[in-house]
Image 1 (cartoon, one colour):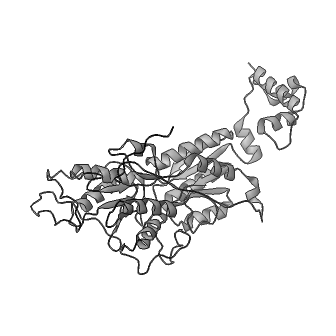
Image 2 (spheres, one colour; image 1 turned 60 degrees about the horizontal axis):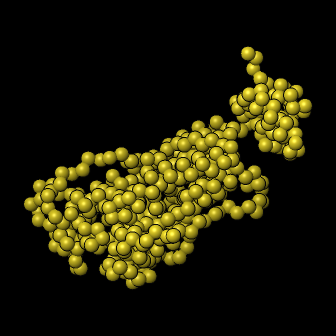
Image 3 (spheres, one colour; image 1 turned 180 degrees about the vertical axis):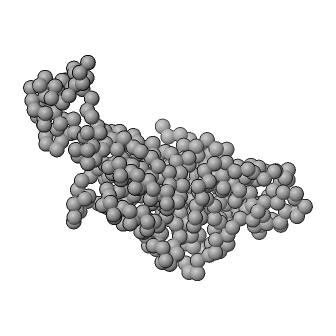
Amino acid sequence: MAKVTRDDVARLAGTSTAVVSYVINNGPRPVAPATRERVLAAIKQLGYRPDRVAQAMASRRTDLIGMIVPDARQPFFAEMAHAVEQAAAERGKMVLVGNSDYRDEREVHYLRAFLGMRVSGLILVSQGPSERAAAEIEAWDARVVLLHERPEAIDDVAVVTDDVGGAQLATRHLLEHGNAYVACLGGTEETPSGGGPRPAPPPSGRRAPPATRPPPPAPPSADPHPHPPPQRVPPPTASVAPGPARPPPRGGAPRAPPHVEGWRRAMHESGRSTEGRLFQAPYNRYDAYQVALGLLAGPDRPPAIFCATDDQAFGVLRAARELRIDVPGELAVAGFDNVKEAGLTDPPLTTVHSDRPAMARAAVDLVLDDSLRVSGSRRERLKQFPSALVVRRSCGCGEPPPSA
């Protein structure tokens, strides 16, 4: 059977092949509704399938959107990628996803690969300042939208959440429960790729001491399986000044990630010190679990912990259960992201919500917006979505009844 061509469609519809192209590609010129219907009917009758490779070669662009995330195994990035895929499908596009594993070289690898494939645009979720990525984007003159984070090194269009404000909400809420202070699990300067399980230390069978103020004495040294001490982050030399919570370019003065800065602001505004209360923990549950084992079994166990991600909080909840620490009776916990799993933990996790479907739609709309490539365009280049506190039981509250 002979292959159906665009000429066949034009002949049956009584129009030109150019008009058939305009219908298939939704432009660049408008087509009268009656003519469009004839072309679509002819396509259906003949079973015509456009040659996407030929189209891409002609237009120098595909119907693909590239998306780079740090680790699609983490629930937040998995849900965000799914939301982007749905938003792209509504625009007739497909999404290719690459994992940078929090490594600059992997990020640059996927930048080159996707841009070399002539994707329609690129959505980049970058967790830190990446001068190499910025140079690559500039060299390709690429259509890029930053999602979730806006590194200082990459001054491009961005769709973000108010992470600083959200972290302040969660920390204030934990303090309002009467906790003497709130510790913070931030990220690390070099977040490893560890998205998979890590072997846990053997349980000691010993119940952790109850949380009191001041902190309880250190556990007996006879424990045959002592947990490694968590790594503390040195405190800042001055209080955090208000300002945009964005990482600095490399070589500049260090500035806290947004979640950590929000935690610090809430602690400082309540008159509490942050010294010795910020702990480095990669953003995944497995490494956060290991950090939490050492922190919660130590002599300075905090009364409350704010985690920069829900995935970290899941690791903290697991460690608390293993050490027989009651949450929220002896330890209050809050996370950030409100992934679906947060409502299924025991106890359900208090966290901060971001509107991922709306952020995904905004990112897709922006990455396909030709006006952003016009010099002097007045189109908004930074779209920030608000954060909202989702109260469940891990903080010490009774879970609110479902809304009608």
